[in-house]
Length: 146
Image (cartoon, rainbow, N blue to C red; front, side, top):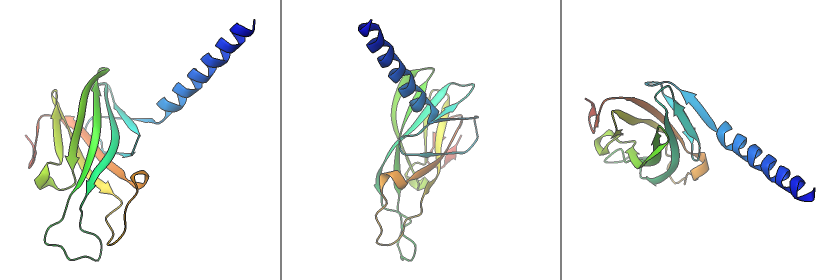
């Protein structure tokens, strides 16, 4: 009897853990902009594309109040799953010259913006970043979707 109680308790904890993990996933449509914090995921339906914001791997954006010779760049790392298959990790950039979009299968994912804006002399913590992303059809180039 104790064995069944322990198994039941473990099953309940697993179910609750799964509910918490999946409740962090938002559902959006193709060509709709959406916001994710680091660690959050979005499901693009009915295409069955799951996008997870993993981290900001670099941030050299020009801060408010700074005079810069170039705009800088924020690099966002995401993972993509299509129909449950892991397609790997991709990097998209806040500076379109560096590649603000990436292609997978017959789709593209674009970094629309990276928040918060850089601020001179301030380091942004990973948990403060918000990526505004959009998934669409077609292949992505550094200068847009074609």
